[in-house]
Image 1: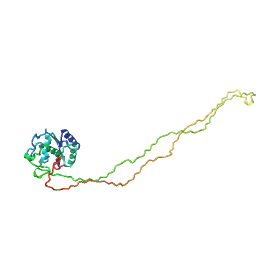
Image 2: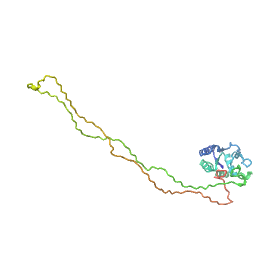
Image 3: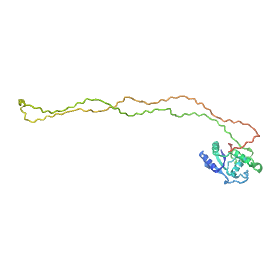
Image 4: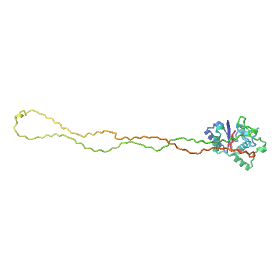
Amino acid sequence: MSSTITALFDTRAEAEAAKERLTAAHVEASHINIHDKSSAGYKDSGYSTHEDRGIWDSIKNAFAPDEDRHAYEEGIRRGGVLLTADVDDDHVDAVVRVLEEANSIDVDDRSNQWRSSGWNYPAAGSGAALGAFGTTDKKVTAGATGTEEVIPVVEEQLVVGKRDVSRGGVRVRSYVTETPVHEQVRLRNERIDVERRPVDQPLSAAEGDAFRERTIDMTATGEEAVVGKTARVVEEVVVSKTADERVEEVDDTVRRTDVEVDRDTDVETKSSTFGTTDKRT
């Protein structure tokens, strides 16, 4: 089932802004209509009846008492703008909340202001039929059957979940440092000396072949320092984590709406700001 929600605004800009809010809340734009003095069926004087529905003829699913309808018509006559939205029954509460937050007019309060300045609900003296009118395929019908009002009974349920939170951490970073090292090493160097010594003695028989060419080769060696490095693992740093579980007690409160019914046939029920086909909000 679907319902028609109605809301009155002082300006068209406010009504257009409310329409944008509804489309953002996933209400199809084709199901939202805005009505003002330029709309079909508007009258500068007089009010709608069951025979002549006036501006309501284009609002197919509108169900509202004559007093409500005439108050909306008076609001349009005074420069206001009427917004209607056809929504599924499951979405009525959400749509009403959006319109309440969109600076819509409290029709009851505004009607009282008009009455205090001389406006009077015209049904009693104009011959207009009382009761709600609308199509016959909805829950609320015309005539003596009246209207149906629904008060939802809402109950909260506690939902406990889990989420990850940071409990601190550790960062281990390795880096390279250089340390000067001083060592001593003993090195050996050879040196070749050539010495001429004066000699004055007769040539011996062993040196009989003194007049021949001779060559003597001698090589000197030396040592120099050679530096090399070796790497050894001298320590390990191990980073690990462990997990444990605990049971935490969660205490909270949940709310529930209860409905108390007091029957009093002498009390007249007034309409609210918004009209729906089968709900009054």
